[in-house]
Each structure stands twice: as structure tokens, then as C-alpha cells.
Image (cartoon, rainbow, N blue to C red):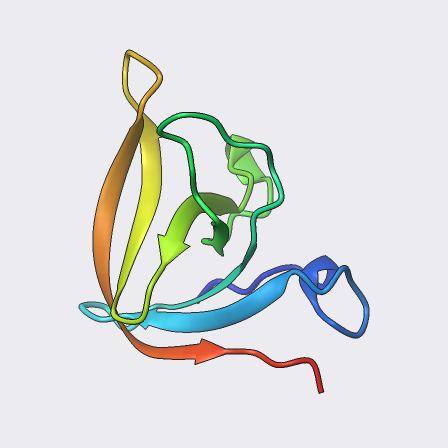
Length: 100
């Protein structure tokens, strides 16, 4: 399970949180938020997928990606030319959060 930090939530943060999903093979729950970073070229990902870590050992706690209804494209690394290495995850229980 990987939850977004409270700084992304509606009531106590910037409201950039968008929703959650479960990775289909291992049933891991992940939240995702809007990506406001300026992106160029192949690095054009609209979402931050929160994967945990919270800064431990250099891990920023999120990965760039694109969340669709049944799949997620997530940048897991960068190759020698600076291009993203992207994995395709099949997902279930895709939920969109609403600010009530």
C-alpha cells in the first residue's frame, strides 16, 4: 500500500490528489495525484503515482505515470539516453476522489 502525503489532500493540502487503484497481480493499493512538474519530450506524464519510500534512501516516494481506467503506465527508471523506462501495470478498483 502506498498513500499520497496529506499535503495533496483536499482538506489540508493543495487538492492535487485524484484517486486510487489496485495493481491487479499483487493487489497493492496506490494513490495518485496531479503532476504539476514541467515535463518535456518523452517525459510527458500527467500523474504522480505514490509508491512509498517517503525520502528513504533517496526515494522520493512517487513515480511519474499515466493512470487510465484499466492500466497504468509508470516510469520506473531512466535509460542511458535520459529516456523513461516505462512499465505497464494492469489495475482494478480504479477510484476517482471527489472534493465533497
